Image (tube, rainbow, N blue to C red; front, side, top):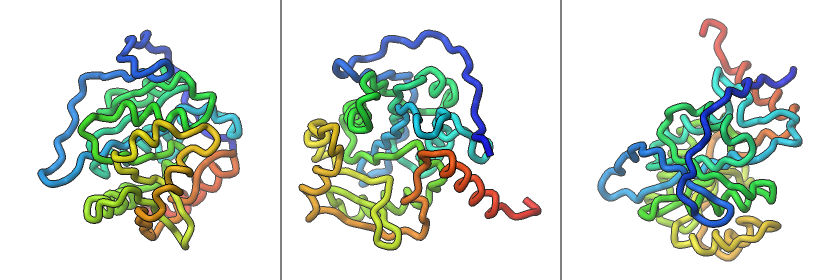
Length: 243
């Protein structure tokens, strides 16, 4: 089954935005950020959507799942889960990603260095997060099948227990998305291209809470066409015939 893709639509030239460093630029669209209820820390979701999808052979940010593109589904799930802000880190085909998301209440951080790997996008997203943010939820655009209930569980653990890191697990295996406390901000901004967040997680292994979740979606990403076919088949098999 060939992947379903969205045809790129021309967009107007982007505004210059606010420069964060030589390789990362934030675009503040003037959209409102919902206020967190009193007593709860502000959580910034960082959606990594900058890659070229070389292994997939199609730009997976715009692949279709349940009548939405991957990036739309991920953003909508994060918003439904109740995070305080969603930062979409763009890179390859930035204009197409922005066009797909339309007027959704998100902030964009463009990573000009995206070809160097995911670590550069993580740093770009963290730089773009609100100064009031108490934690960063790192989310992957190739996990559009994760639902908001799973994300709420992860957030709930952070809010109740205030660890430095929260990692979802399934059958004892670590998954995504993960939460990192903002006290780790400077360490995150120093991660190297080879090891990414692994070193940060290792250094703070005594302050990690792992939460077992009922869904295997935290372990499943979508890198190659066979992954995409598997995800679509799984969703199709779960839809009742009379739906």
